[in-house]
Amino acid sequence: MYPGQPSGMRLGNWDIRPAGGGLGCLIMIIVSVVLSVLLTLILNLLL
Image (cartoon, rainbow, N blue to C red; front, side, top):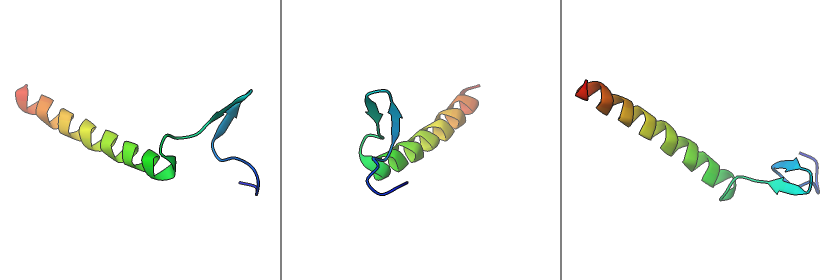
């Protein structure tokens, strides 16, 4: 990233950034992985 440039992705006039910044993005990824593993385990136990 260059100094003075906004972080995130730019589409036309829209500036797309992760909600909550980098920490929010990291938390969302971790929660997603944990829930995916838990739901897979629960589904396998039911079947």
